[in-house]
Image (cartoon, rainbow, N blue to C red; front, side, top):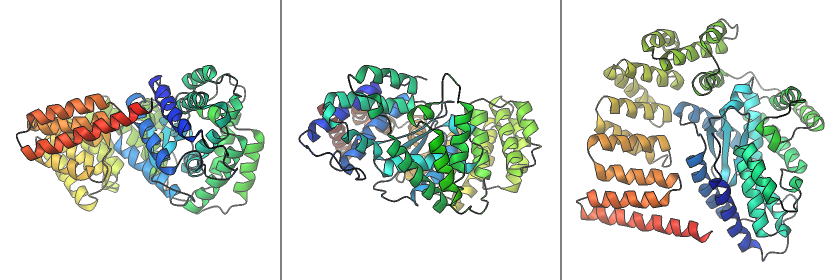
Amino acid sequence: MQFPRISVMLAATVLSFMFANASAQSRLPEIGTTGASVMSIEKEQTFGDLYMRQVRATAPIAGDPVLNEYLKDLGNRLVREADDVRFPFTFFWVNQDQINAFAFFGGYIGINTGLIAETQTESELASVVAHEVAHVSQRHLVRNMGSMQNAGPATIAAVVGSLLLSMVSPDLGMAAMSGALAGVQQASINYTRMYEQEADRIGLNMMARAGFDPQGAPDFFGRMAEKYRYASKVPAMLQTHPVSEARIADTRQRAEQMPRPLVRDQSRYWLAKYRVQTRHLKQLNKAALTNAMANANNNIAQAARYGLAILQLDQGQPEQALTTLQPLLQRDPMNAFYLDVQTDILLALKRYEDALKMLEKAYIREPNEQTITLNFANAALEAGQYDLATRLLRDYLTRDDDNVLAIDLLIDAYRRKGDPSSMFEYQSRLYALYGDFDEAINSLHRAHKQSSSELEQRRLQARVEQLMEQKRQLEALR
């Protein structure tokens, strides 16, 4: 899926506003500072939130709770070991087979599903995530923009908007960038060599403290550089993060000086990788999965069996999938990866009570776990237990209020329950998360008309006014 030009326009709009406000400042930030003179932390979070709304609306984000939970856990392990963290981080998957990862304002980090498919160990995946966390914690994008202030607000806005776009879709981003440069050297808007080296160094330290093997970084980037040395088209990540032999050698030397950690359990990494390759990228067939089930590495063999169960389920063979998954579930009945697929199998077989019983037991043990909660709510929906579904989802959204999948399930629950006022209200929340404030406001008007409670109508009207203010703030940036 191509990343539409609307995102370039939004980024340019936001950045024009930012630089118009900052143009009176004549002194550029010193190297090594955090870019506070260019953009405050509060504004960075605001701009990141606006851009994320457009990413949700236009990028093929993978709405997969079990993968999301895995990436969040891995990312937060690294963030806990990072210095200069100023705000919460948000990690998300983009379902594209390109090898890419990117970070932008406000702690948002996107990882392509094609990246985990290319890695060979969890430490290799962690090396890329740590590198992006370092870019954010050191505010490299903000600091880079500070060095461009002399180019003028309009040029900077267009260039950086194109740069942000190139992180998600390099071909489209680079095309937009070529028309925006207008005399500005392209090298000046790429991540500079200094920033890349800084992110490498900080990322390695972060990895080591978090218990990952720092050798994952030179191993992965070295293999990528060798694989695409003579390629006419290189992966997205190598376009925005150029890798030289000197950089790989420096990273390897640093990694060799660090202690090697104890071997960690990588079973979740392999389950995530095989889930991506089987369900999202469609890279593995029955023969490949069956062959991998004989691998001497038990983690790989179990992940391949898990992938085969997914393949059978997705091909409309729930009975075969049930048989394939059973040994894994018996060995580890609380594993969220297995529970997710087992739920879908039981629902496909219309064994609703079995699914609810299994998930209720898991929910009692882990009531805040995303995969268990959303599967429990979905099973309740399919079983016709709408009150249970709405209760689970509303409670979950108090902790994760911008979870698109949870909101979408809740909209469906209210629709089936025959509660149009609540349905329209949550539709409004969903539209707002996608940056469509007009439809968000229209949905609240519909909810207002359906409500018979004066108190509820006042609350909805207050929310309309809040959205109108957000819309005015966005329009003021144009």
